Length: 540
Image (tube, rainbow, N blue to C red; front, side, top):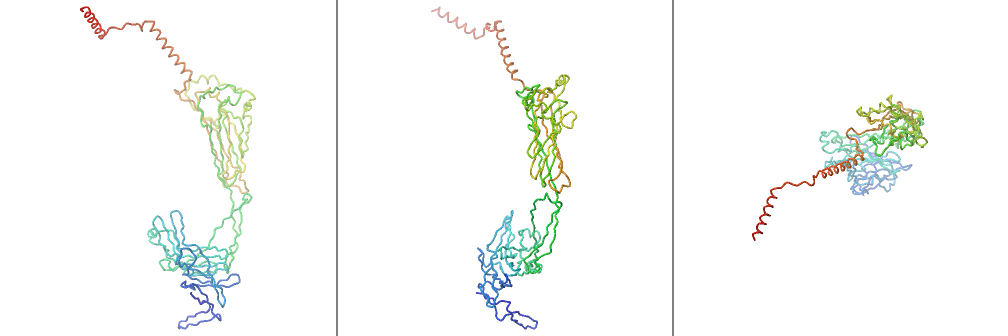
């Protein structure tokens, strides 16, 4: 058993004359005992918990309860009294050797013979600092490693909660080849930080590192910093900024409170929006199969196929906004219907209206209440059907020949990550299209948005805006690729069969099938053999 006669019993004063004087501070020495061979008493410090005084004693070669760790070292808490008393080991770290993985790196911490307790300091009534200068650290990366070297490690224990904070400033993340490539600059793998330690009046931790810079030694001053994360709600009610009054409270007995600082954080409103559109279907091929366009349609089904233009306005954030979405939708060209808009655009989170409501379903076809009467194309346009080459007409709302329906939608409180969708539904007016088979059409609608304001008291410096377009293509097949009606095919087959029968009848009347074939050489040979056979029979 190791016996420590506490260093605070007497003070040895050394003078150059070689005389040693021992000043006894107590009448009797306080004796504390620790494990044999543990170097019990290598370091010591006074410590106070509430109103009770204790002595912290380091034993850097003591065995602990850490799994797989030999002579990891320990710190003992001993009662301070003239009669001494039993000492209890303090549980700073109960874990054994540890491995950490990060990306392609493997970090290894070795704690055997780390000399934990080589230095020990009382920080406050609740905190104790103890160091292990021979704590080893190794970095592995794809077969390479830094080497298992004594970087040292210190632990700050809060013995009220049992939590610890490590201080090991010489741990690295490079392997040997990295140090070699850098000519071993700032190589601190042998720091042995923690052979000595102290706490300044300002609460800073000062650590001695005799192995730093190839055993030239260095002091490590750790500035304790912290990051603050605040979650602030109801920012929409903030006028311009939010204020925080901050003060740091440390566990130091000397000057534990810092001065109070007021931090003002400006609140800004910003928002990024995107708009996109699409057509369903993207194109319509004419002529339509089994479709008979009506000159005076009595229902939407008789007008033509359904065409929809869909626009999505999405708020990418971060602020919620109020916006206005405006859609210009082509309806007529040269006063003739191309797209018949039959209902107002309504979707969730949108309130839409048409400034000129009479442009929506003017013939009341949605309820089948009347029969539409539409104007015909002029005779001049019809006679030009075969004289003109097929061209493409771009029908958009910027053209003076197009008539458009404007729809305005108000989007309220569109939050980050949310979308507002507007759907414009119309019928393709096929009667007009069949009157102009020499024309292809590009029916183009446009949509634009303007942010009116943000849903908060703080407003953006710039209010975003944007626009996009969507088109539907109406196409006739190219010349020479027209579809042949099935009736024509059947009629052609029947006509061919009748013609074949008529030719057969004419040839039969002319005796074509009763003609005598002229004799051949084979016929002469057969006749000669027959005559010879007849003569032979008569001779007999």
